[in-house]
Image (tube, rainbow, N blue to C red):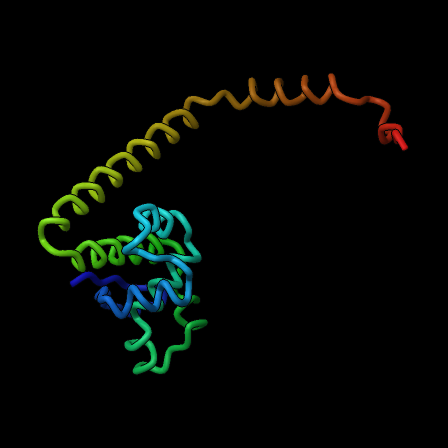
Length: 155
């Protein structure tokens, strides 16, 4: 069973069932069973993923007197990443074992690729020469319109 803690310190348990998948399809227009790209789409769209998380936790939230807006207030920073991971793990657990193994491998590989991409971006940013970038930007600004007047209208 997948779980995460939101930014308000509330613990949530994520269980994906067919009913959950149907609620997500109805509320968000995302068919997690028919559209192979839908899982990746949810992982990339923070708003949609947080809404899907709420739909997974809706019963728990209602029992605790937490509205969807209250739930949303708890979804920031690491809670988004942890919630997304929990949701994707619960979604993989929904499927039968033969399909689950392939989906788990996809999740692991995509996580590994994402980590490597972030590491490369960080490395490139650390190597960035701010003075060189500033000079390039200033040179581009100088080569543009210099009169300070708006361009003439073609009308």
